[in-house]
Image 1 (cartoon, rainbow, N blue to C red):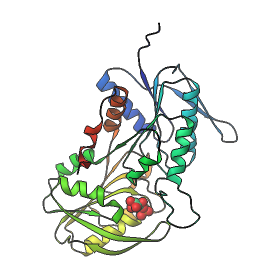
Image 2: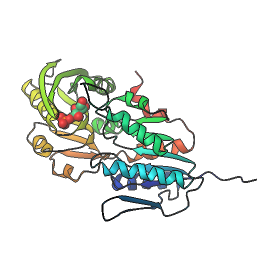
Image 3: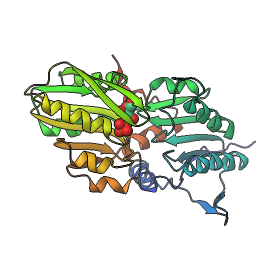
Length: 323
Ligand code: R5P
């Protein structure tokens, strides 16, 4: 009889090797050995992607770390890595997707459009993933687009520590749109602060129109909280409005630093005193933003991977959202 000892291996796609290495380091520190495996990823001359696990993964639990931000090759790479792991007889395959790209198209908000979040969920599942771990989804119901287990992690616990260090009083937490209220409420609850909401409209893709502010920020230290900064039009317009309305200081908190178009310029010209972002996306542009502090979520992902393998509950990582 074969009593196989369970083991796990972590592999990284090319989208965010830096975070993958940091996760590997955390796992090594906690568990005392190296869990990062080597996967060769090459390209044919026409650009098609080729993947080969450089070691035996038969019977192993495989965790593939890959954010699916643009370019879409990141997504294709993830799908091919899952497929290769399945064909190499991995035991369980977990797609660890720190930033789940395409998640903002999560409903038919106008006729004849795609629901890309569902499409990508289908692709990941069909490729052969058994489980997905992701962080701060644009809409938490995207979990339900998957028919496989989905662990939703939050960056808030990591951000809370940074905010506590600032020792701020007279706080208001601002959501720059109605969709972000749940996220902002968790911060308001934690810091016993007022919750303020900005009424934002999207007249066209990537165009932000701020209509109104619901709540008072006068003389308050404001935490402006959002899941994504893409073009930064939402964040910078919100910051200008908050300053106009008398905010004493503005601390920006955002999980996913997409930073497309002229986001850097908009942020640098905005009245944000400090901006915290995480490393879910590898983006060298973040270093061009003044007053930006990068906060790593490697520890949270390392714990989620370890607990998943050990069949432990990871709900302790979700405490913030018990409301
Ligand atoms: C939208 O609902 C999201 O929470 C973000 O506010 C949005 O994706 C940010 O986009 P941008 O930076 O382009 O305004």
